[in-house]
Image 1: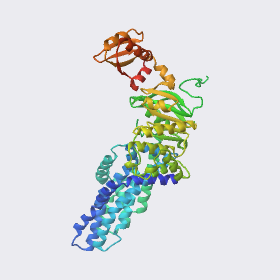
Image 2 (image 1 turned 90 degrees about the horizontal axis):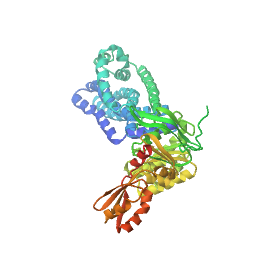
Image 3 (image 1 turned 180 degrees about the horizontal axis):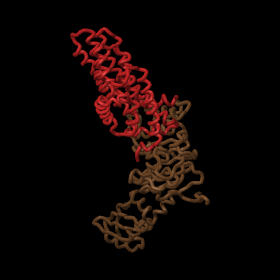
Image 4 (image 1 turned 60 degrees about the vertical axis):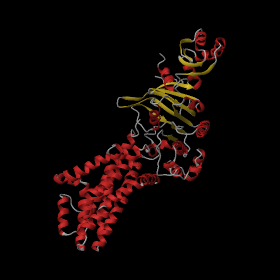
Length: 253
Length: 318
């Protein structure tokens, strides 16, 4: 257990470095000024609805996954590129513990960074609508998003030099286009899993609910189901990352 | 079938702690290490060879960072790549300059100690920092360290759990002369304590100062192994090109040509270049030759003493 905390601590310390954290914070907080200008001079209920629409339509579809992707691919990918991987690997610690530590570090770091931006938007929405509970659903969705992104992109970052670019392609093609048109793959769409968790806690208008229903397609609303899916993803990811780390040839010549 | 007796073989030691067993490693079509079959025991062993000889790859395979393409390697009887528990007994200093830049030196070393399951990490880190003379800078971020200081921090991190085997990949790179001398002293001391220290270097003089035994690599293969004296003997018949700077090149060249060890002479305006089969004999003859030729010698220097040329000769004398 101590080794796990040490791995999480060292990777989190690197992932939370100032420049990346600030850049990702500004990216995720960019919804706040957008909301402010869109809802300025309108009613509180309009501000609340606009916040929800921005959250699931832009935040959870693009902004939050991109931020989580950037952090997750860096968890072990940066260790490999910076040649610091031997410091982790040459320790009497099972590789699966290193893999689990990297996943936790990526998920926690991504959550802290994304949630900081969410908080700013949450405050703007709460001030304009008078409803301070709006951000709770977003926080649940972001938590699911960060674990799912970590599960998918930590192993990808470990084996690929251009994992972030590939991840962006995945977000655009798979999440953005293919899963919108092919009903059969909607259950595996992280975006839909995240929205299904968010919608379980969000207080939505009928219009918003209809829009969410269209997006979810075959996926049913429910935080429990979403949590179960990301838990399975995390488990598979840890086993996969552990197995890649055991294969060893990660440090090159 | 009986196992070959390796005790008298220069490639093997009597009580091996680190063993490479017909070890090969290739990356696609490139063979980095080819059928290396040798062992290492307590004391300091220099892993010597020019850049690209395969030293780093060999150390990484020994440490379990790379999977061998053929053959195998063990440290204290175990393959650390398969049994991470072996890392309790192994310290490794990678060649790369990289460190955890977000940590201070003390935190990095304490973290390494804790990861290696050392109980009193604070005391162990203090000792390791003292050993490499980094106590004064212990609380500075590693990102502010010079290359030499990073090397020392990495050595401290590799030593902090008191390992029996230490693999050091070019550990003296970037260190200043004083620190280099101190690190060499430290490695010698650790070797005398009975630990197995394998130090790679492409600088013959460095290895000469610290290693009792040398394993020389060229093109991924072991070219020679044994004591430095044995290695020198192996190289003694290599033709050498020697340059002599003198004010009277022609008379001196004429005089030295008489020696049977001189293969050819090229005369320039202010000196001569001699190709010799016995540099030692030539060296002994130069002073007498200069006296007889009335020449004043200002410099004598080997022209082809690069490690690369020496080792290539060891692999292919012709």
